[in-house]
Length: 65
Image (cartoon, rainbow, N blue to C red; front, side, top):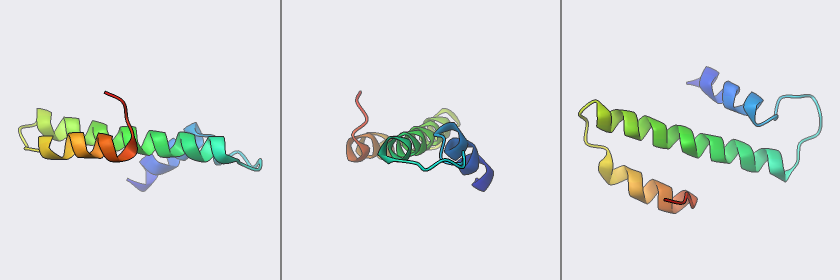
């Protein structure tokens, strides 16, 4: 999982060596939320009951339907 978080940080341009601002941190947060939602959807697809987590997570992080 640490490697995946590092990949998301690179995608959000947090590891460029340049000073980062609010935009980069916001992008990183959005990528983390999307990753969590993808994991939940994968759990549901594999027969595990994670549906009860999906909607509250989206609401908490402000992800639009």
